[in-house]
Image (cartoon, rainbow, N blue to C red; front, side, top):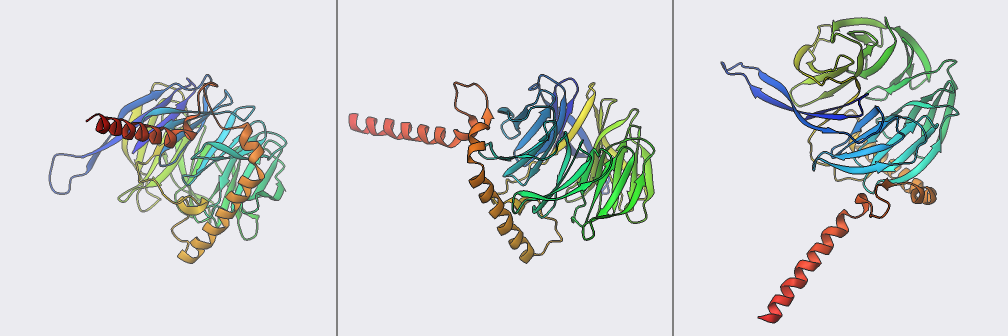
Length: 391
């Protein structure tokens, strides 16, 4: 497990999490520590977004590029250059696809194996401020500075619905099962039900909201321009818990589960990244597991979990909620697989224009890994043959 965080100072930090049991009796608790692993200075401007899959960390920046970092090999894997404007949001769907949004109003779908641009969509008249992919892989939501909320049909690769929201929203997020979604405007959270596509209620936070993450289908963790993190119930629209997390405003928050714990991670302008263990009762404040000081002004956050790479290539394979039945899962995989094939057919011209960039005289890494290995094997076999002939 590794925490990764970007900052205004153009650096990506990586901290490995180590868990060691405290010396003591049988009921001892694990001691969590964050150990500095790497710093990666790939960008020429502040980092604005980060996304993680089982192999790569990708970062977006105000320098208009997306950089790829290979977490297995701990090397820079290259850069994607297609957007004109700050990269505002990055989302992996499984291990095969990356979706990016930027201030140029474009949403781009990338093949995360070959690092080619499969599709480039003019999504908003203004900036794309945020996007979120439904757990089934069939729908996506985006918000922008044109004061619209747009629903995208990923099966057909087109816009499905446009809703005017009268104000500029800066966050949109699906719930874990995809039965509802939230849209954030300044310090207010509008809760929408998927079946009606209408607002079921509004949550009001004390200050402007900077980041949200669902802890369950109904409980939402909210961070904003303050030191406090709050848990809100999306049904009752009330705050069920709040706790002081940092000494300065919280810039990003995310949650994940491992076999033993449900964890949230927070990053703040005070330079600290903190990991918290959630209680089963969300009304009880979480306990601090570990913290690390970066001495930087943090902007974005991710968690890389060193898991076995998913071998299936179809879109829904890595992000379906556990509640989805096996039959529904098969249907989703077939439908999502169709959209990828359709996107590839429709966007061959786009794929030629954008991809993994680096030195213009060198072949791109993403397309040459396999061929290099094959060439080395052929050379070795030829050497062995020559030796046998000499003997």
